[in-house]
Image (cartoon, rainbow, N blue to C red; front, side, top):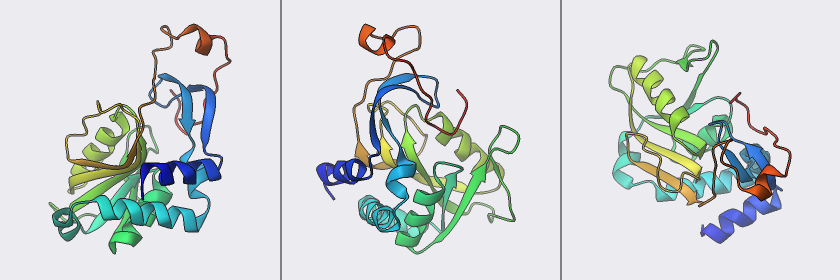
Length: 193
């Protein structure tokens, strides 16, 4: 799937938004990708996951036994990627503000897994999820996402494969360009900044 085809999927789902958005990292941006909308259609979610699975190196696919995603945003894309790879799907969640593996999910000591995100901006959530997986005994050997909007700066500490890389500017709240400062900010994500 080409970048244009991926973007066409987002546009068809009305998931590529323009405005003034507060990202989960606290940064501000004039564009927002609402992955929940692009994933609400099961056929579209499957197409995107199959395309992403095709980009993951064969040696990684041969070693992983599960895909783990952070709740809430990563649940559907993590499940679909696990299906495309033929492995189990699990998730970490933040019942008290810190990611944990719960709900009876277990990892064998050293079990090799892939972390799946919907969108990576700073990589903070990914690093927190990777730490939780390590605390549960697993080992993240690779990460993936539908979208990398970090402008190539996110360091997850493991090899990383996004389906698409988008260079979208993001700004500190006190350093907004005038055209963005003139628009009311909205917080479309699932996590408080």
